Length: 262
Image (cartoon, rainbow, N blue to C red):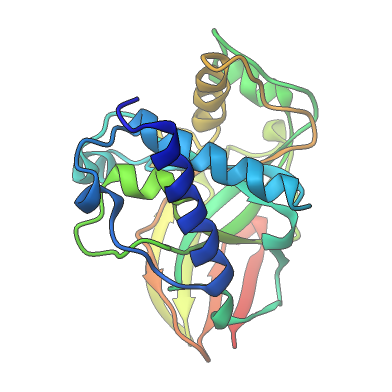
């Protein structure tokens, strides 16, 4: 790390206050251009621990930047990750308050619920699939507490990988019941199709990120735990939404997710 501990703690506190007030802070990399990816995970970790100490319950992890296009756009060679708390999870049909966020974009994903713990250092796709209880369609609500213009991967990771919330569908499928690579997503806003994709766009198989994350956690002496929800990464571009927008995503045999922003 290049940033001193007091700077990391200060930035984590800034992000916590921005989360509380739904505000936006100046770019970390504009103020500290020497900040590294390691610094950004340290900032996220201090913020995460403070949230848990305040009573929030961690329910899972999100993986981002899982497409080659997004990795090339951000200048990195691997995905990133953040944490998800119980008060950020919605069910299909929910009305979601826009005022809970600084800005709102939607991505189309699959989520996986683990039936057993998973750890590296040699976790493979096959091992990840064996540890998964079921897959469920999910929409990720992206939310940034750092100004968007000029933002880098260091800013994004520091800001909990831009995670805001998750909307879960109702159809569950075990990995052996369906070829998860070919689950489609047709994303609409107010009845008009905006984005389409298939889950193979996520690292070739949407569960590949679960294996990657287990191996990444091993480097820090940690593992993914049974019961955790892993949001595996988007297979569409982000779609902006505003107050009053109705969002619908059709996953074909894995059902439909609907929500409205109010």
